[in-house]
Amino acid sequence: MNISESKRLFAHAQQFIPGGVNSPVRAFRAVGGEPLFIKRADGAFLFDENDNPFIELINSWGPMILGHNHPMIRKAVIQAMHEGTSFGAPTAREVEIAELITKMVPSVEKVRMVNSGTEATMSAIRVARGFTGKDKIIKMIGHYHGHGDSFLIAAGSGAVTMGQPDSPGVTAGTAKDTLLAPYNDLEAIEELVRFNKDEIAALILEPVPGNMGLVIPMPGYLEGLREICNRERIVLIFDEVMTGFRLAPGGAQELYGVTPDMTTLGKIIGGGMPVGAYGGKKEIMDFVSPSGPVYQAGTLSGNPIAMAAGLAMLGFLNDHPETYGVLNQIGMKISEGIKKINLELGYDYTVSHLGSMYSLFFTPEPVVDFESAKTSDTALFGKYFQAMLQRGVYLAPSQFESLFLSTALTDELIDRILEAHRESMIEIHK
Ligand code: PLP
Image 1 (spheres, helix red, strand yellow):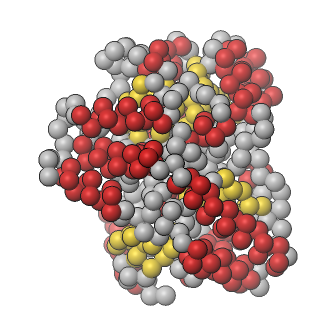
Image 2 (cartoon, protein in one colour):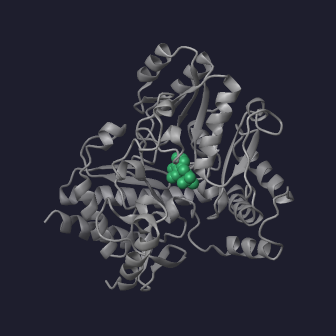
Image 3 (tube, protein in one colour):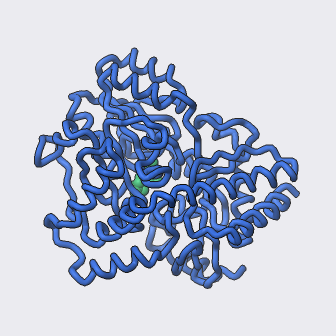
């Protein structure tokens, strides 16, 4: 495969951009080789600067649930562009999207729009601290909530991939207020709560984590967290930046029937534009400035172009709930196909799947938390990633990420993915 243009651009980029990329995992360091520079994307395909096509299984890390360059979203953005790109003042569209979000995610009674998932989680814990008057938070080991200081402690995603779970620059003072627990372990939470009685403002987690690879909550786990948080007056925050509007119109909380006090959203909510949001119970959200004392603001928050894209995306998903059945079928065909091929070839690896998210872990162990996720053979994953890329399938360049499927994946493309999987598995085990 000729990737000369990507190579040329990457060499040039490194002179002006740290590591040549604007977000660390993009650099392919966890899998070796050099990143592809993408020129355009359409439907189920990415095209690199040499015009090589790649079938997409990551979809911009989640947002492109209907595939790339969807005509409906393109139309909404172009229409909005005619009216100006930013006003820094309230707009009708912001009210419309806020109302739609509260309808789709009923635990969100009021919502504030921001510009990324990171902003959403940073703001949500500030509000939870302001609301409760307490300082400490609980976070799960291997969960990723963006790059806010409080969260870069035993974080998943790029932080794991880069081997820097505790980033320099995060002060000891900040780190001491972040308490850590393994996922899927209620007793660990009980213990933290016992030792930090009346000091914990919030418990934040990815209800279905995707940032240590996809891991499924054990039966009763989310319900158990809800009970502990009720009993201890801890604000339960579901970080649904990945799972929101993806696992169901109302996200993981709808799927599992567990209601958090606050929710953070991102990715799909912006239809591919930079958008995040946080929301929750009215009594908590009324603590946010200007109704309340907790300050949070943004020059470009609620940007009219971004809101137009988000509204088109959410409006479609709200009007077409059958989309989730379609996505689930696509997820089933791919994950079951992978399991079947692995079995035929005699490889015992764990495949984790839910709806339109899945991960193939190169370990026979059941993956239930970050410890078990780390039993995966990451060097073998790197080889698998490269073998799939050579066959025109674009995966997340790290073992510790979920893949995100889109409705653009036809049966014919799924067959091509599975064929690439078979060939790649044979090649990497030679
Ligand atoms: N929370 C979760 C669960 C995420 O997966 C991510 C990003 O992948 C974030 C927060 C941060 O979002 P952003 O990258 O938009 O800042």
